[in-house]
Length: 137
Image 1 (cartoon, rainbow, N blue to C red):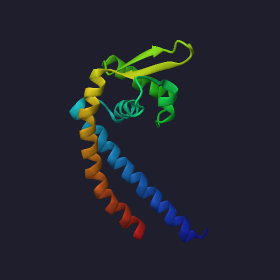
Image 2: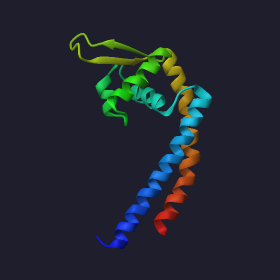
Image 3: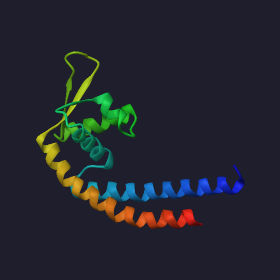
């Protein structure tokens, strides 16, 4: 790899990081302001809903997310305190914990998805131009 190739890779990496930072900050702020949840709580609710099952094992949820096990546990605990999810023990494996959405969690998720999609549409349309410009340099 030449020095020019390496510089291009670093430039593209930094453009990607900048995009992620801008979009995630805007998304976190919008979700907090409109719904009282952060991006991690939204992601947990959204991924629980995407499983299509009544309940999901905590380790499966964690495998799909960008959070550490302890951060996921804290996120789920906040959601549980807010009445948005319920946790329960697996009857077949006492080490496993199930997480399920409550009706309140489904309702909040439906509203929060509208916010999330609007923020993504707004920022990612702009970011395509920014990252294309950075890649072209």
